[in-house]
Image 1 (tube, rainbow, N blue to C red):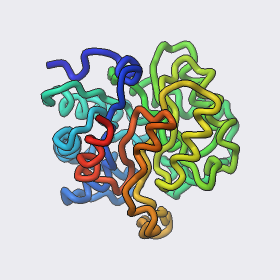
Image 2 (cartoon, rainbow, N blue to C red):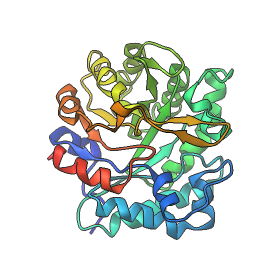
Image 3 (spheres, one colour):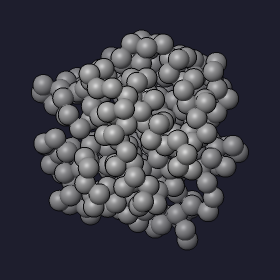
Image 4 (cartoon, one colour):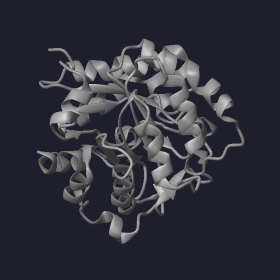
Length: 290
């Protein structure tokens, strides 16, 4: 069967949709080496079968959207295309409708120094647009169902991404990484989400790779400026230490069950997990979205 029989936007207009979880933690659990600047992209380059297996684990857990392993891949069109093709293979093998979301991670991800959790790289909007344009072009050429403009820390970078998408006819969701009721770069969330509200290419907006406790206030801020479906896929509350390339353990509150009912009441239609959220957690989320 085809991996998806209709646009994701149409499904979101009818119901909640389950995203997958963290690709890096699943690949690590499969024994893959994620060292080096390319992170999951290294496995994509060296052992694509392992990426397929990771996607398949999430399909089996009930995920309806698979995010590609392109987050930390640079300007390598063959690898970017491969990321979509591998996710597509897992989606087509599913016994239900599954969409493929091509991950276009932030500029900071390519630096591999934790910059995506700070933003404010010292680049102009035009320079960021020039950086993202060829990557997004290569991903779109591979034919994903939607783009995931994810882990965006800064309004300036969001503007650059939306500049690249303008007029392309592509469809994307835009998710910021947030902390304490602001973007990681410190901007007000209402300002950040208002950008997406005005962009016809954006089908949904929200947050990812943040503490679960930050999700609900961010969704409420988004709902105050847009009627578009909202997205939530936090991590487990851990904090990334770029120096040691490891996650610090989450606060006890982050390990509590997520208030998914409150997220849905705020407008969340696309819900899943990010770093350190594996197939078991995604399988547990599924019934909460039914």
